Image (cartoon, rainbow, N blue to C red; front, side):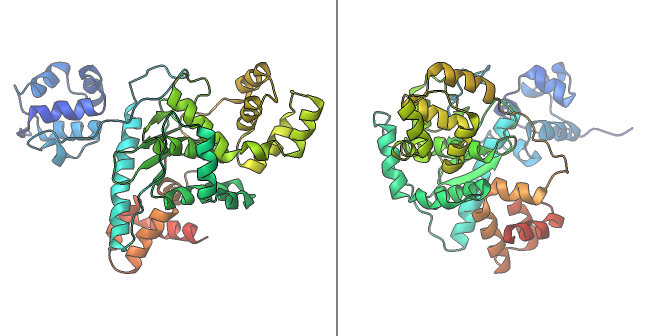
Length: 382
């Protein structure tokens, strides 16, 4: 009969690991297969776990066995503020996959800083700052000119425009990652408590136009130095969310330019406040946003009615939350580049090409198996 070897652990570390992923004892028992009675004994220090039990804890809590063997619970930064609004059901409570995405973003920014420092690249400090009392449209107008965002308008391909906007934001001293946010109705998040501010964007199930708006909404949070986890609801009562929505809208759809568009001038002259979808799509394509964002700006300028906007919002605003579909199978190389960004991936390959890291290190930085490295490089250079 196989003899079970008990491993000496600090009970407080076991409790910390469970609570850090927001599991109660009942949930932890179900996921690990360890009985509730046994779990209580382990967490209260009456018994010590076997190696097999530690492996179960490691898998369930998404922690290495080495972490579970620490003498004391490590100190971790708290989750960003929950800024979800009317569309959310469980404020203050997050799925473990959301928590893992936050952890991943924090780990990636550490790797990004390491790659830049190794390459001798100075990391710029994000300087732009505003107060919630400031007019978001005025701040957006100022920063839009300062950041020279008009040059990106020339991209007709919306995916190229998204990449260009991300690179522009990264050049300001912000790390941008597209992550798997399949739970909690999140579209994005921002964190300002790292060495480099972080913006996380929902990777799957969102069109590029929505990602662009999310990027600048979260950038608004960083400008305010007030990060959070957001669903970007238009029906929010939170002042900071309204500010960031208005900031993103004015950044992407400058009012003075919208009012000069021929379609808008024509509607205004006829006092016509009902809009055809094709008209909104034409405007949206010009500004790299979705038709609802255009309609919202038209509403702000009294060029449509609240009832018409609400009606269209109800019909069109049906985001696909959950795992993105992959009808042709997953494209790991594409996901890797989207997740970490071209800047990060390029730095990792540069470090490898200059023999500063080996192939195993490159695999770790990219987060892919060795067999996917070549495909990732090919796609990066395509």
